[in-house]
Image 1 (tube, helix red, strand yellow):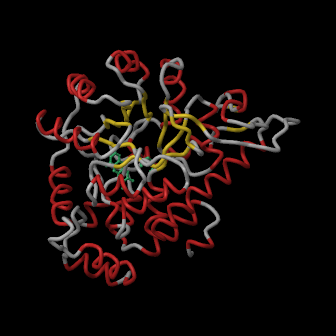
Image 2 (cartoon, rainbow, N blue to C red):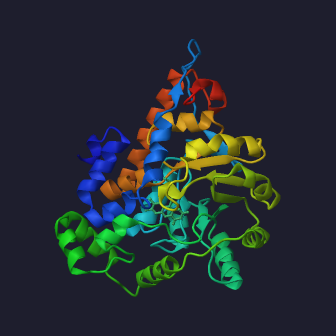
Length: 376
Ligand code: FNR
């Protein structure tokens, strides 16, 4: 399967599988423990049925939404993901440029292979930044000053990673970041020569562009994820002037306190099934969170979005937009910036079609009446 002939996201995943050494593909593709939640995220979308509205004038369909004062042409954002440099040499730079070209938002991860100033430039400014807390408050202050100075508009605080989930595929493959040239890795690399050549070109250490320090930063963060507490949330809120979004919310009971703490948005997320296995699918958690938020701030969702109809279903349940993680990493691996854009174009075309076929001209027309929920 080649990227250009990929007609859907499953094809793009297959193109990535063929390009990447197995441990690298597994690192992206995998989830925690038995991968129950990973599978459930997708299955729960499939179990929702649609009830299309007919006789609407859908000659012009526009999926654009507004988020924190910015019009975004597609309610599909690119979720923060670390370690993109093992998928493609240009990693975050390619993803940021793709998001800008497709007029959507890229949330850059703290775990980055390129300095955040460079990524911001590649994306034309106005990106969102995802924060994993540094070890001290002083470092947090310095980090946030740097993020703001680099032109990031929205801060996303990820709260579901006090420790890392059990990634058994990685342990079985002996995989860790940064990628070390073990005999096993070299063998896997040899089975994917196109990837290996790219990887070496992009990752041979040079003093000039700070690649070494980028990898060192990754190692530090990956060695020590740390809990984010309510007190940390208040501290970060005090430091960050722009919109603050909390990512990793599943319990509607926590919504009032989140909003009281100054959250300007929430992302219903289980980290793509990579943290606690056995938690519910995000689309199952969404309705209660939406009800608790009651329209006061935007609610976003990620996890298992693989079709335009999945986007439509999330919007119908009250999400303002969704994010995708793995799908664009598959695109990145298979074709760099063009691959990420291809994924966004496929989702855009599918969403436009789904909207037209359900009589929805804008996301405002997409409501719960379009859905038949399981057991409903
Ligand atoms: C992630 N995710 C993630 N989230 C985050 O807040 N910071 C991070 O650095 C990462 N890193 C990361 C790496 C990889 C390889 C993956 C696949 C995911 C989680 C990500 O933001 C998002 O929640 C999920 O990927 C959404 O699920 P789907 O779209 O992959 O099913």
